[in-house]
Amino acid sequence: MGSFSIWHWLIVLLVVVVIFGTKKLRNIGSDLGGAVKGFKEGMKTGGDDTPAADTPAQQVTTAKRSDANTVDVDAKTKS
Image (cartoon, rainbow, N blue to C red; front, side, top):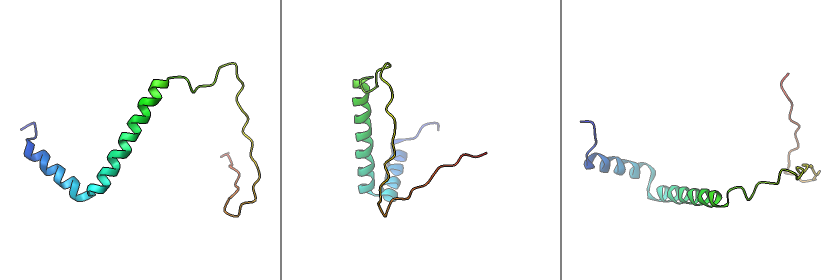
């Protein structure tokens, strides 16, 4: 009674396919595969992407753009 039989798993799989559809499940599978592949590549390179300790950090500058779709806001801290 503690484990599921193959028929239970087939019914669960059928319900998942009916709810989500095969196209969405395929997209989820490919996204998950891409994420795993990217993670593996990141683990292979190790610390190659980290900056050296003696190199100063780059300063972030904000350039004023006159784009009509850009919203410029200032963050305020709670006091």
